[in-house]
Length: 343
Image (cartoon, rainbow, N blue to C red; front, side, top):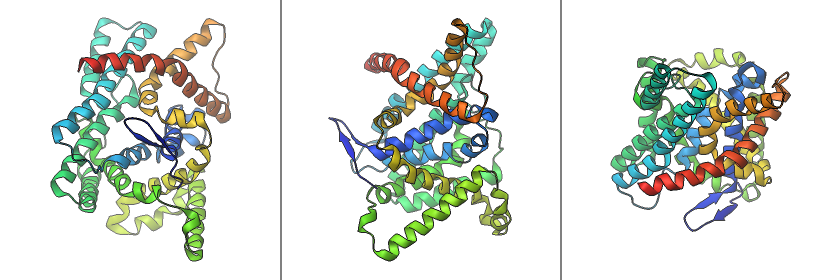
């Protein structure tokens, strides 16, 4: 993996990570068009949420000692405050567009305060409070146990608890129940990041290169089967593994994430893709907003949105990301600077 970095006064950015985040946010926007996205609809839902928890885990392990209160304050500023700002902007847009009653607005605000998945006025925003819970939980576990592999095992147990004991309909405050399902990807990302970042193909021995290309080819082939919904070919084998068969969805997601990591090396060459990838929190927050506003703007000039083919949906998805990046995000960044200055 190329370790191309951009250094600022406060952080080190990795181009390949930003490109990977671009692929992830594109999949999120695309998948939420459902059947208009064709085969991509079900395909992206097998991995796009795990991908973002996986990426979020990259920087979970820091060499710098930080107190829990400092970490909590940081996550409140970078996740929870943005969650509420994006939520209330979304509620405002939805209220005006749909001419909601005061009672309906009140109900939406209450839903925002609880932050429960599948019950929010702007559906994709559930990820942000869930990530907050995941990051706080992982930080506490790592600070207590001080062994990332033991923490990974505990996260595996939490996943089993979710699969075996918890109801599949999200209902807990800030998606604490869903965090048990997704923290495993966060923990894997924390372990995988230095391995991926330091990977250099040209330094491998011949047999290692052969192994890499073999694994990559098989992963791409498997991903293609998943895209065309042919995963049933492998399910009987995975189910036959008995108790560990509950991890088949995790295995499936990780294989597709691996293929996305291979692809991101191509997208690092495109500055726009990297810039979009740097702003995925804002793009997540703006998904409902931009998807409501743009069709209304088109209506003003007598145009009607028609996603007639999956290719049209792909193109429209990219247009949405570009408009959000160039128009909405610059304004919101100034807004957040003022809000965070208060805290």
